[in-house]
Amino acid sequence: MRPELLHLPLALFCAPLLPGIINRVKAFFAGRCGPSVFQPYRDLLKLLRKGAVFSRTATWVFRAGPLASLVCAAAALALLPLGGLPALVCFPGDIVLFAYVLALGRFCTVAAALDTGSAFEGMGASREVWFAALAEPALLLGLAAMARQGGELSLTGLYGSLEPAVLLAPGGPALLLVAAALLIITLAENSRIPFDDPDTHLELTMIHEVMVLDHSGPDFGLIQYAAALRLWLLGALAAGLLLPVRTGRPWLDLTAGLCGLCAVALFTGVVESVMARLRLTRVSQLLAAAAAFSVLALMLVRGAP
Image 1 (cartoon, helix red, strand yellow):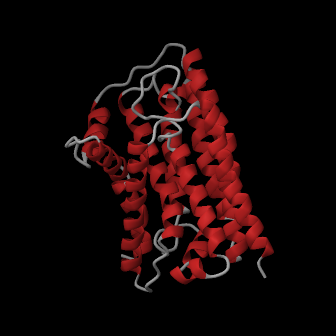
Image 2 (cartoon, rainbow, N blue to C red):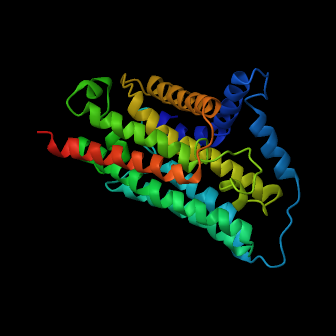
Image 3 (tube, helix red, strand yellow):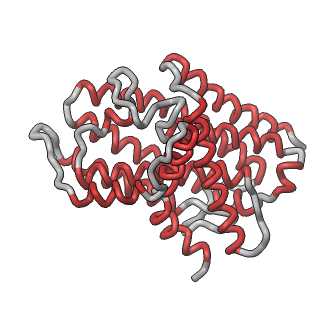
């Protein structure tokens, strides 16, 4: 089997490992043994064996939300290269489709939360959309800077042309700025500290978790699985910039891409261990910094000869 054909099933199977690595790192910093890195798999299997409870006021929008979010994450995964290997589906302009497929998955989750008629879930949905309105421009501007630098409108073309020497070239600082913006966006889009605490149960701080309070059983399992895929997706974008290993051997390049994803998970766990959650008034400032990084990167590549 060609390695590029292996990426999609590999991501679908290994994505829950990333939250497991994050939890393991947090337990290490807390001085605890912590759960196994395979605990997310056990949690997903447990949820899939349970029954689902639906509110009498909820419609088909609520029931379709988790599955639609998972389908959008899988569709974005088909557009994503890893370790210099081409994506399963690639064409000029797929960088825009990638961003909007992720946005569509968020829309499905928000719509499902609003369909319950709960003011509490509506509050979480409004915060999620607020974060998205600040994070999506930073993502699109960062991809635009990469497209300008690489002369490509396809994720496969952009990441396939990267190599360590590119980071030392005149356009290298711009790519590092984009990588910094992508790391911030990864934390924001996956509701991690300092933007949100996935383990919190405080009403005034819950954002993503409050939107899925009414989901149970297999539906909640699909949401957790889609969240792991989203972490894989955005983490792979940042890892591909920071660890552009291109040996010409597909299997080694794929292994390097997987190591980069593990490094992103380790970075996320360290951030969650040494930082506290920011106040909501500070969140917009950090996302504005990510957008500023992307804008500065775009200005640098436009000014380059």
